Length: 436
Image (cartoon, rainbow, N blue to C red; front, top):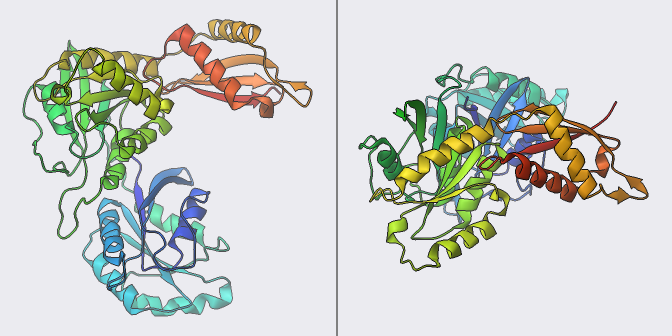
């Protein structure tokens, strides 16, 4: 199920980043008392009363000649287009400004629900500051204080009322759902057509041709699959996909609905920084991952080309050391037959469940081979391990003191589990708990 999306929009210096950080619970956005400091949209996840959602912090919307303000306005318009709910942020201490009214005019054009927030209302005596904001035409304004965390519960309650319900189709556990993510123009739509064997998706050399995620249901060797094609944002009015970072949110929605994610790279262009950022979202979401190098036919090759390219991938994607690599050409369909078996294997490993007795034998042997570390005279003792979930495979290890579990030793245990059970194509997670 794809998470609903909240976009926080408003003119500069009304406290959007402070509210964003409060909601996600960590300092992700830069907070500085300078208008326009947040120049790029920032994405994160939040949760409120069992509602999980994605949230976008935008730069302010302002019409003017100052540097980068037009770019910030475009970013906000794209965020508005992507959002299910919009939080319109204003500053109660400054009252309704001309810039607020400009923002309101932009929001009038969207059919998305808008929740009006009046920030910097730090105590109940200041509630009268909100009255003027009724004039913006978005109903009751919610008084909040980003610096003190006041009023956020009521604000999120109002936003959650507008979350879409039952939006995604349930295909069933027997259907393997996989998506293609990557920068614009790496050949995702062409690869969809090559897999399906027909021109199901419009293919164009213009980056961002695919506007929405497109689900295609098909069978392969008698088994059902759903392929989710997603791409960047195409031209919409005056808003352009000028940089590759705007493909991130589109990728997030596809990742959430997938069992397996194909991180697609343009073999002709090589690896870009954005490739790593997008792949990181799939890894953090715990999805099975395959790295697909497309346009391999356009690469000049010798006997070392594939080996050298793999070394570059492993160097740049160190966090995806478990992900298999498939080289192919969607255009010529060369090596396209190698992809589906790898998808099947990754999906199977993603859902693999290990018997507890065998799991503990592997853990015991691992500890005997490499004793747990000590810290200030205390040694980590591992008593028992059990698998608590799949997709991705997740294990709880019961120990004497969880803080003694160093990252490097956790990594060692993960490697031993991979040696014993495979798990190629899927991340695995180890949670350390104190034995009670």
